[in-house]
Length: 543
Image (cartoon, rainbow, N blue to C red):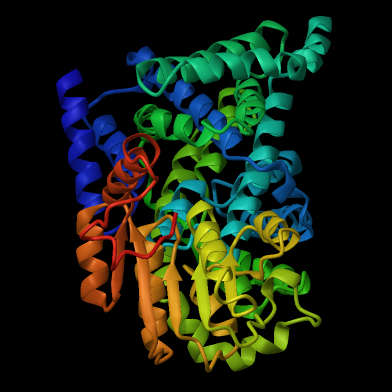
């Protein structure tokens, strides 16, 4: 039956993707279909092992992307903690009430079991939120960063539960794990030497499954906790992002097995689907609670609304919590199926809501503004730009170089925009005039003050989608000056030119001509004279 399992899973995933939903819903459906054919989880022991690997690699990937400093922001750690407590109180009350009304799945459940269910229902989906943010190009927007920070805090709560649920008292040797940071220089040295190919992937698997999962399990701790901590240990390395990308498809493939095992637990009854539908009907309560908390942490109503919509669903981590609870006998097995259906229904509810989020904000912004608390959050206030002649969007190496070149001729008439506050602080210390803002976020353009004498905008952001989005926003604001942009690929150059960018600078093509120019100047020209390059006249120096 192995070929049939793969074919059915692929078909269900493709069908769901065609309607714009995450493929994981298709994998849950595939599990139900396979169950109809008489396949049970107990007959596929390897599937369970792959599912466990998927969860372990998911936590390792979260650790690799975790910036500990972002979790110390009040809107993230306090917002997620208060939302967890508020959600649990709400869901315990709701589930108890439904039990008293006679719903058979809830009659007879004790308070600790209701608490477990409320805990599982309090989470929001990391997979869904990341997909929505990536599709909208808002991963680096303020609301996107707040949403991701809250999701990571929720994941940490889940890992804490998974660790406690193991039930065994850790060995005294577990204390030796406190010495892991001392091994960081040696691990980083190995990280430097594995290159960028298959050795990098193998290194990641060894770190996640051996240094993380196996080592922690050896001393009586939860393997998933080990994977998360080792991921955090590696997060500061320059290649951590590359490693996360290298392991991405391994993680996604193994998580397919996890969602299949959920479906293989059994088919939902009509009563189960009805209860799941009730749970989805109260998802707006989760959204309203997020909205209330985030505005009370002085975020603008738009930022709060978009972040809340991203978090308005149920989570795959809720399924993981439920899987542990059912395997321990703490919850009836049917709850795995109910939560799986509720998860799927919540995605069906949340997807169109996120698509229409900007339109809904525009329609109700006057009412939403009443929720705002002043003074606003420092990162969410109107952006005062002064009266520059030159605006540089993206102050990485390219943007910084462009700024310094322009400063030699137009001191005091240049403004840089950068979304990372630490980079903004660094540039200001270096004497550059830089403000914090994300030009790939619609909200940035709504907060931007007028600059009537602006003549040239340099698009130096690393992502083509962000640069293209900035062009669209400048058109919307009726900007009449010149536009210049950097690109990495030829097709991106064509797209920007068609959108109205006057000068497009291809990094790779320019790198070749710049390299030859450098060689001629340093090695071949006796007097250091540089011959004119036929394409050099119209190419702005942005590197």
